[in-house]
Image 1 (tube, rainbow, N blue to C red):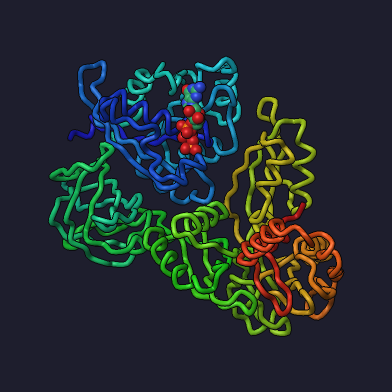
Image 2: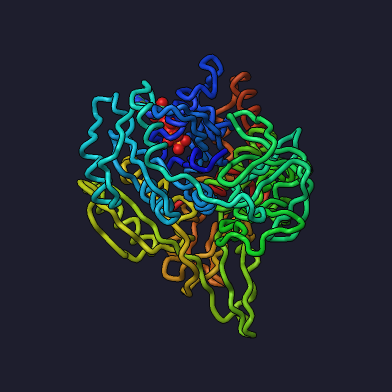
Amino acid sequence: TELSHIRNFSIVAHIDHGKSTLADRLIQETGTVQDRDMKEQLLDAMDIERERGITIKANTVRLDYKADDGETYILNLIDTPGHVDFAYEVSRSMRAVEGSLLVVDSTQGVEAQTLANVYQAIDADHDIVPVFNKIDLPASDVSRVAEQVEDVIGIDASGAIAVSAKTGQGIHEVLESIVAHLPAPKGERDAPLKAMLVDSWYDAYLGVIVLVRIMDGVLKKGERIKMMSNGSVHHVDRIGVFRPQMQPVDELGPGEIGFLTASIKQVRDTRVGDTITHEKKGCETPLPGFKPAQPVVFCGLFPVDSAEFEDLRDAIEKLALNDASFSYEMETSAALGFGFRCGFLGLLHLEVIRDRIEREYNIELITTAPSVVYHIYMKDGTMQELHNPADMPDLTYVDHLEEPRIKATILVPDEYLGDVLKLCQDRRGLQEDLSYAGPRAMVVYDLPLNEVVFDFYDRLKSVTKGYASFDYQMMGYRQDNLVKMQILVNDEPVDALSVMVHRDRAELRGRAMVEKLKDLIPRHMFKIPIQAAIGGKVIARETLSALRKDVTAKCYGGDATRKRKLLEKQKAGKKKMRQFGKVEIPQEAFISALKMD
Ligand code: GTP
């Protein structure tokens, strides 16, 4: 296909502004899928993604569009993940296309994620067509949103298109605008092959499927290709395009987006952002900006029932095959037995994997406190990474610690601003900026990632009644006064509850945790001290009083059915408890104890 007749684009939007609905409508309007085959939200393939209303894996579709000028164009849409954890993937997909549709819900306006995503599009030098969605709703206010886009983002909104992805109104104009206003790709057919690995995923029948954007040269079936990051060579056994189902083609030329398969066994062997070339007569220099994904949040996953350890291993290995950014290694905990220490791109990534293990593999899990990666500088001048507070070395060898920091952007209606500032301040944030985007305040904070990973987003939602939007990027490491805090239950340290905290906040955190645990741990026949300690020094303490025998007798005596029910309930509850010395701790305690209300 001639380059002048290709348009490659992505859709950037805040969650729920209608990206998937618009994509479906474009597919339908171009007749790529027959109406009767049109399933709602074709591009969001996985159940969990749909349930959570978020798109995780980038997907793509090739549309044939006969424009009003009588010519037929190929439009390649790349669907990008909509969440901060996947910012690197988003930035790569952006480099694979020349333009973006900026979708803004005209009943809501610009949100934090709209900003984060559109800045990535601007970074990638995209031409941008603003699309104001949901004009079928009475609350729609297109001129207000246009003003916001110009003031806050600083791009021209005069060519914006008002649409309803729901009713189909304005969709034709969107297609025309893609052809008229987005640039055609550039590339040289005669140059050595240079292709970007945009995404990859595992398919049970075909093995790993690799999504590629050809920059220069031509890729054909049967050729031998090389991944430039590690030099590995593969034989291409299939190439094609997505319409959105897979369709084989003879070749992929410059400017085109399609897939290849090459008997690759693991997604791990394909790195997003890598450059693919021919094994022989390949290109000299790779595309700029490649970096392998680095997990930033770690936590332990343990089976509630220790007999399920092998099942858990199986589940984790299978999931890792399809997710290069998820890492794991075996871990043993004195309290929890055998499990895995797992690394994730962020909290959402963690939640998705944990949910899939519980739902698809039916394994109940104990998740230990999520921890960020600390840098420990030793007195001998070496640096080591700390993924698990339980591994904290003896302090006499430690010179200092550094923790990762983020830059957070929060958009919030004015009336909640005070609560948001307080929340950020409480989490050791440093304010960097405060400005207004229409009636809403935009605050930028420098925050320790550690203070954000656990429940920051939940807290933000609750103090702003859901009206705030949030986005962040990693900023690097900084030294601070950090210590490891242990929790002792009945004088036994529970390693799964160890956390790294700032020294100034240790008492507060410690007291909150022991108070929570006191409520969460059921009473036993004996008194149980619950303590928080730094090194050998106890900084907070609660005592759970002993159960009095006659209470049970009085309550449950006599009524046989009630007694049986109670026993059954206790039995079910048992499964969710873990024994620590002589004390049983329920599963939910591990998560709840760490929340900072
Ligand atoms: P993520 O995939 O989570 O990023 O969300 P999204 O941006 O893809 O949003 P999605 O297409 O899932 O739409 C979110 C909600 O808005 C859904 O309930 C849609 O049915 C609804 N919606 C999308 N477009 C329109 C529209 O034009 N009008 C109305 N009334 N509702 C719409």
